[in-house]
Length: 128
Image (cartoon, rainbow, N blue to C red; front, side):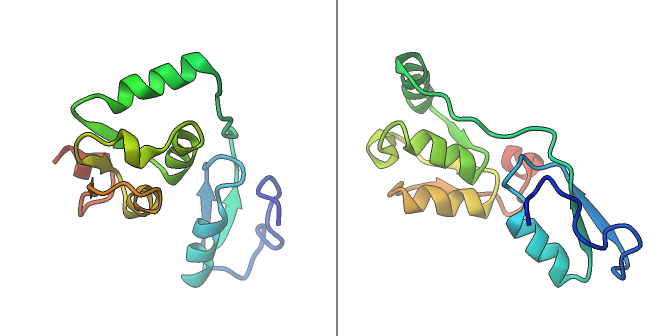
């Protein structure tokens, strides 16, 4: 099912509840499965779609960011976009931080050795 469509039965569904997802287009699948597993219905209302930037200025900005004392990746999509520009394992200078476990796994899949994810997987957990 395409993410930009309303799931069949969303209005007047047999599900006891509906979860409204504002994730970007194409980013609802895992959440859709989790919600269904809990007996709910997901309504995907994507206000945007992810687009990767390319070119020398983007690469320079990424390299500058990766040279900082603290590097934070906020999503597996961010990891994939950065990895499409340069090998992340070669760029790591210190432990990198993530907001969640999925992002940590994405970095590890790219060969990044030291990744820290908070127990509370949100921005407040990262700051703690």
